Image (cartoon, rainbow, N blue to C red; front, side, top):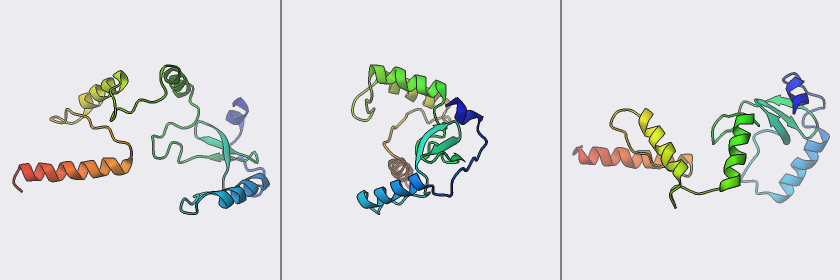
Length: 147
């Protein structure tokens, strides 16, 4: 990874998409549903911080590192360590199906920084569930107030 860290951003070494990326894109089109289009003709194979390297050796500045989750970038040593430590204990325990001590601790920490009066946490599985829950809560709030 250190060689990736030393390279300039961006560092384009082939025409885009490169020959290996083109082959993988064709393979992707042959086997995956067109209902999930790819935003960019890039086939990334590794990343570090805000840099990603594609299968042809091109390096890009990744403005979407962690999209749909959180923007932590790629391969940050502290995040890699935390993932390894947690995976050694238990890979996944969905807080909406069963309790997990880390989820309880996270709920307490989130509630502690939330606006006054918002002292409960509701974990969701996706952004759409979060939006749907927020709308339901707003409707319920207005019904309780008689509005």
